[in-house]
Length: 266
Image (cartoon, rainbow, N blue to C red):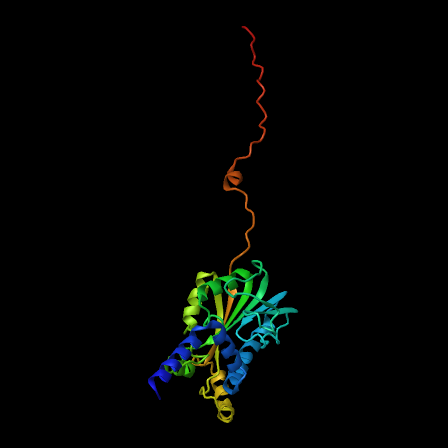
């Protein structure tokens, strides 16, 4: 291959990885392929074990693929999806994940689906999600696990222009540390998709039994993880000033009446 063609391919790959819009759209299309469909099925299984037990009035999903509804097993009546780009046809509205147009303390359950890894400002995105969740509300985070066969493939093909391997590597422990700084208590961390990440549907179907066996043992080496955290911040209530509570109460004390002494002169 001529050197000019090689340079053009390298520039195309670099531009593909650095462009957030192309990366998000490519990952959304990848989730609808053979390997992506199996990964998505494993993520649905993890969420179906959590969502039916979470209650409230509003559920927000913020994910890569706005055409995928991961909250179908939830009992919450009002569920909506936020898309990042204007062509997000399956989303209820479009907004920047780092600047959500939602009032503080207004969402009971927030579901983040692979948005932290592919955000240029993951800390800001997580702060926004924490801001909109009500006190004692729930935050569900789905991400790719670096300590897995998925992570090994990502490390081996880091320089290749691929929608999955181009994101940041965020371990569950790192995300848990961020959540603790935002007054969230992590209730549970689960992993799924323990199969070999190969884009071949027949092989993935044969490895489904292995994936189910690893899931029963709750092995932490699955390709994807689900973090369930609960917001610990309590709403502020007015408290009387301490000085007012410590102020002594004055009560009327009856004055002593002077007694009439015997003044008889002897």
